[in-house]
Image 1 (spheres, rainbow, N blue to C red):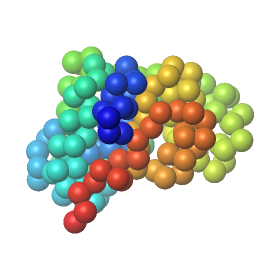
Image 2: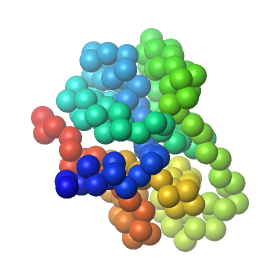
Image 3: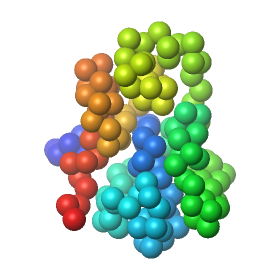
Image 4: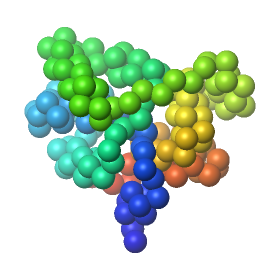
Length: 162
């Protein structure tokens, strides 16, 4: 069983890190949108299809207010901002995106808080507390998750080399 199949088999729920959530939203809008946004220019349509293939095996994506804030802050392009927010709204209304809250007081207790930041420590805590799998591009987060026994995929390994 390859890593992706194992990951899908072992996890009922999944957290998608910020950049990959942006890729999902941009891809849902269309192939051209991926290349138009600064945060998603590094991705190809094949990367989007790979992500969709993985996510298609889950009933919902778990997220946090911290990830959603990063998505909002990175989604600055006026024309596409509205389009991506429409896609985000669609995922929420369809019940495919569910937000998990974690108190900032719990996050700052983590020894790696100053190194990894709010969103990444939030991902770590939510996934650890709920046994969620994580997909990320962030090597620092990936290594921290592995160190803490959290099932994760470094999506960088599955990206099409341009």
